[in-house]
Length: 250
Image (tube, rainbow, N blue to C red):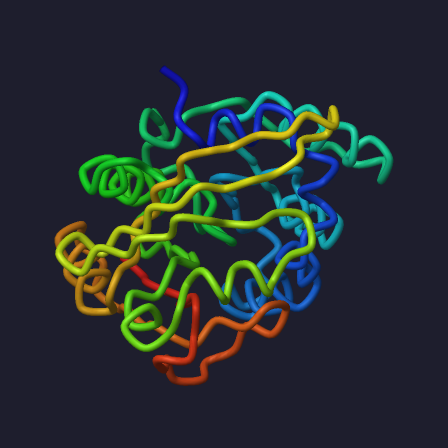
């Protein structure tokens, strides 16, 4: 049985690129470059790369990037986007829960909830982090964004998500304080003009959980910051931030 994210991203690459949350690529890549000290020898793995916006921009700036995504539709669009830019990027269809990379990359990125934390169980989400750690060389770094569990304690998730998009609407929203999972029905139109009604389930994490998970994978330097679209920086995380930005080093 296909999960909601598989159904959504099987035919959504064109509309995806018009979403508000995909418009901050340049500023986000600027931050990523600074974190790897502009070292052009860095090998980068982009997990949940979508239509390739970060992977393509990093490649244009001289980095060696491999982009993976579970969606064939997304990867096909990423390949087309790279071809338009006259660059070559190693885009692959792959499941982040089942990766075989071993100490191959200097940096792993998962931006805009790329794979983590969309999975239906905590164990699956952890496996993605574990595979990310396994893919890193000694002293490698991971940069990812994830849903901030502090936000729904003070705000309505339904109101926030509905106000942030003109392409979809959520209904029957229920945030579970015991599991920190948000379940809702997503009403959306795909690239074929078909209306979809998806039963979504996303995991929100509090900072202490992320820190513990990463420490268990032998990350030694862990920082968690506020996450602002296209303006990644090192501002402190607050309850007003819908997402958190995580930077950790082995």
